[in-house]
Length: 250
Image 1 (cartoon, rainbow, N blue to C red):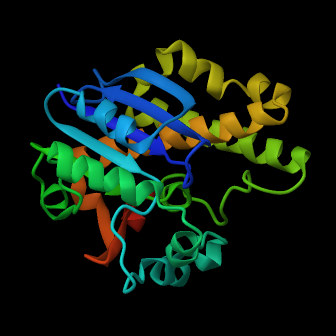
Image 2 (image 1 turned 45 degrees about the vertical axis):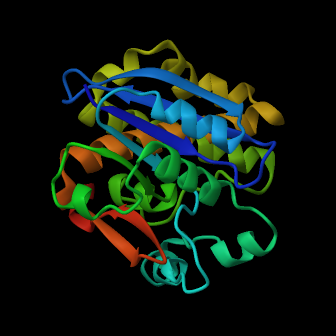
């Protein structure tokens, strides 16, 4: 049974990351087995992901492949800027020592044999162990069919809560359509409950943000594995992001 891992990875050590595990090979059997926000050392997280048996797709919101020629963020800005969904610069992050994704990718590839480049996965190969970079805002825009990104990351608390409530609504609808059994997991129900967003304060507000992104990434891993023709790679071997194609939002 394949495992689909979603990681909303904190770029720096010592901060919480959103983590989600889905298991199953079809919409009528895929379930959530784990949803949380926690702090990791990257070597430990690589070991944890690698403990999943069989085929694995890990979708990770953080740069995995990086060198000075990386340009994918410019392409994200070109395609998604009109939705207010441009991406943070990996060059800026690396200059400040934020290399968690790169460290995780190296551990998964060198220590556990994961493929960090999505060519085979996008070509329809459902067997293997892959780690791919994704960006939740591109997933939201395309799969939620948005005219503008959901604003839940920054700003006043009231505005962030409004964004999280909208996020919960869209993600619930997508799960009902694509992976309904995931909604039976207690932690998924709690994190998609509007009352959770209403009650969130301080750290719990950020934790809800992280876990929703982790769940989104895990669902993206499953949808990419199930129907790779509806996804595209932006970027190249210097750094890339896998995003849904426009027609996938219908």
